[in-house]
Length: 71
Image 1 (cartoon, rainbow, N blue to C red):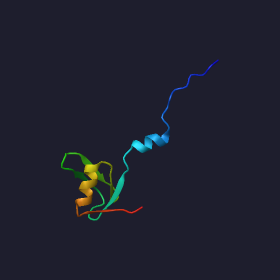
Image 2: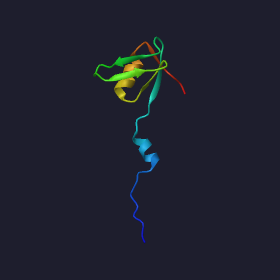
Image 3: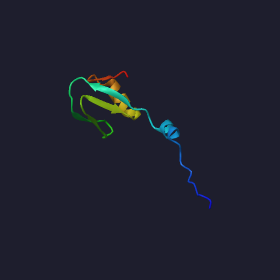
Image 4: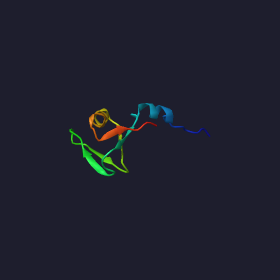
């Protein structure tokens, strides 16, 4: 009896399409919610926040309260 297999995308190809997250340290607060100019929310937890979109990355790069973490 023949098995029917489904075409499943392999994990590496999914990761290529996903934007890379960039983590920043909040120099002022350990917990808060940022409201970006486009109205989206960006949570800060344990003094860190991650940017996934270009708008979030630009906002955090230009805001004086945040510094990028080097990994």
